[in-house]
Image (cartoon, rainbow, N blue to C red; front, side, top):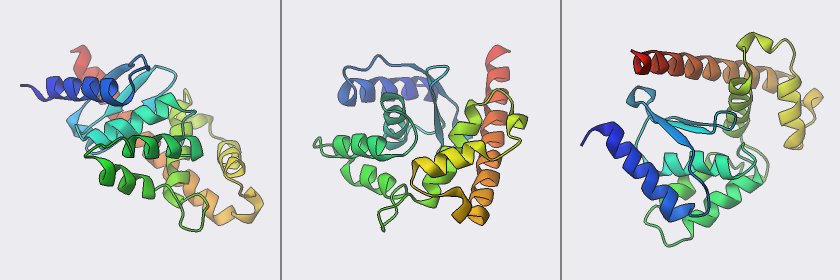
Length: 178
């Protein structure tokens, strides 16, 4: 069986088992992306580079919640981990990367939220100020003026991640068309 067929079967099985009321979106699989994924709400498409079921669940949870790695997404991930699944420990391990032990938002979570926001923009050069970063920080209870060095670092990382993801998708789309 071809990897893309295996990915499609895995995606379909996960949708049926864990998201039975959700109408599945299109998915794009490309092994060159590695163990990364992205939920594009605008295109209603789930991108993933690994057939890892936790990665696919992670991305679908973005689609069925408001996006980001906030409390709603975390609650959905926890809910799936308690459904008697063999993936319980792996889902909880993935979840831990987005929860700060002090009860706040982890740096990884901030970087991912900024990356997601940047990817939603039609043009990477639309970021001329820190509006996106400020909004994400405020949503997570952090006053931007308190965190100047951190949020500049997060913005840079978010932009770098977004540029890489956008380039990988462009290459994938070009290969698919030819």
